[in-house]
Length: 406
Image 1 (cartoon, rainbow, N blue to C red):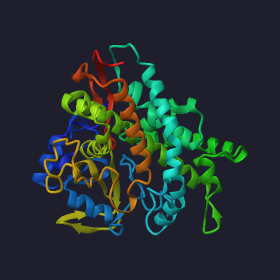
Image 2 (tube, rainbow, N blue to C red):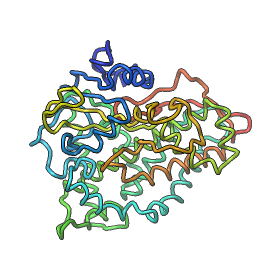
Image 3 (tube, rainbow, N blue to C red):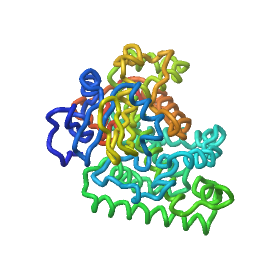
């Protein structure tokens, strides 16, 4: 994606998370700003702040008095207090503030229990094998477009009980929601209306034909003796699309990107399956895909910065994971890193409810890949492209399979 905004001249006073420089390699930008600011500002998107240290990111994440989660994706349309349905928000519970947030999260916990996630693993493993079988005998292919991007979308489609043939449609919805953030408010509104119409049709079909999936779970769920509204159900389905697909395929793709560039790590992980658990946590730390957003809830001073009600704030968990004050040698990927309390799944009340699902998908995807292709590398490093916006992961990942692969 090409940003519609002019190029950034000074990251401290005019940053843009869709700028090609940020999209291509944000890590040096974050390192520089952490030393210079460490809270950057821009007038783009109507005004936005960016804290860069682990301490400041954590402070914001835990502060539900001065920051609201009503909208978590920055765009040109900055919603006011009356624009979003309180206390639900557009995608509960991630867009819900306390105390309603805790009620909704508690209601969802059974759907994300270890037993529920374990039930999805056989489908996930068979899917990975099916995708890899389609690449057999080919000396090179795109590991992002032909493998990583298919896994979470088809797992989530199954989890929600949607038609598997709608996976490509869901991918388009994600691109429009998460990457096309600099479209005009009118364009964004038209896109969201199409998304809502799709989810409404799926909800109606599930009402008529109940089944064992998350959509039917939501239709049957109650809060304080009352059924969820259709807007609430639609919002949670939207959340699963946003939070459960792009984030995980980005994590899978970034992990493969690392292994394709580091022979020693690739051979070590392929030869020592017991290392997988700590390796996954390190990939999540080093290449955390998700940057969340908050809105400033009221005027106040934040470490000398005049935050105004309605200002956007990006909450860069990936930058927090690279803070040398929080992690030793943060720029170095250590597959056996023992102390690793990373923020890849967020911090505070909104820590990712689906983290166990994401971990399962990442583990199975890497296990199956390395079982078939223990020897591979980038076929053209310059051809790797990355997504823009608040979720970062490889969109194209051309790999060459070694003679031991396949």
